Image (cartoon, rainbow, N blue to C red; front, side, top):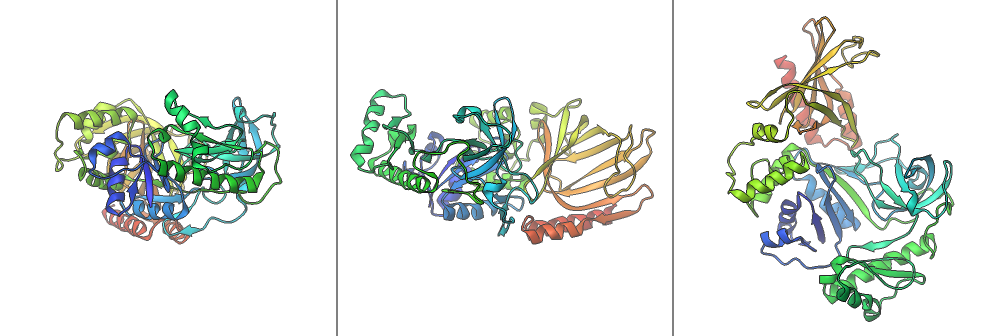
Length: 495
């Protein structure tokens, strides 16, 4: 298997892949400098890219390669979780327009995905969770005809989205196969997407030279990576793209996809790629630090800091370029927080991940206290009236205040609810993967089981059954569930 790797985890993942006997292709210049290994330019079996929020990676490509990478990546740490992508890049399916926005339309993809229930496969399960809508975004610029709410459309996935992301996958009403070195799309005449005129002229004649013809009515589109590729790589890339195009042409017609040209098929018309999303938790990030350290200088918390913000990521690169980091030093949470936040008076979101891949924002509050010695941040939230507090049973009233103490790296955190007069309504202790306090949000994955302390001092453990159901459904690995139960037991005794 070979893979193309990009993003903040590239060095560590390259080391993992090379150690496992795999090839890394189309490597970036920094990767080539750090490793004494050949990095051919060739079409990858799978692409591994860091997500926009830097919290994990998306893997897309051949099914066997994707599955192999999923197993390797989830073995990095106990809090590395994976979800199969129901809409990997290249998938062609039918949908229905449910909403029109200023720049495009929201498309319900449930019909095109079929009605099959999500099933667990080892540590990767279908996402999103049962009952969650599967929607995509179709820009008006990719559609020839006007579309309205209720219209049936046939679309192709151009850019997928992680299950925990706030954005929708991006769709297109045109068709394309392949990518990287070369793609194939409906049209005439070879197209070259490079700025070097001489290289463009050479690539323009490459299709005829290789003797591999796209389907009738289709053309080759050479990308920038093709400029430095050898003949064998160009031939392999074009051959793969043409094979994909022939399958797509057979499934949806030789002229490509037109919005409204749909039969309402139950299931994708074409799915040239498999995909999986892997979310790294705090322990996994530190494990990847150790792997990266085998290849180059790496400060403690390298990936943890880089995941926090773009500015923090740049700061890490600068610090490592200045001096050789001490691999045995403690993670400098206080320095990181002082440099990038949060500080007292800042707003901080509490982003409550779920083992099924969803992300729920519990709210945003004011940072009222920071303690760099133990890595804790206190957040105060004003509550709105309505309903009651989960597990506690007390009504949620106007003027109530929730005080949450979030400690970096801890497998739990407490929230104490008080009435407007200061009366304690109870404390809810959430069991979760190790908390990460980033500049704009505290993040973790909830592990269902929780411990509650009532105002009279009674301690109660709740939601063990929900955790058991999550394990049975394949969302929570048994090893992670056992850790959650152990933490809950310790808290019961301590409280």
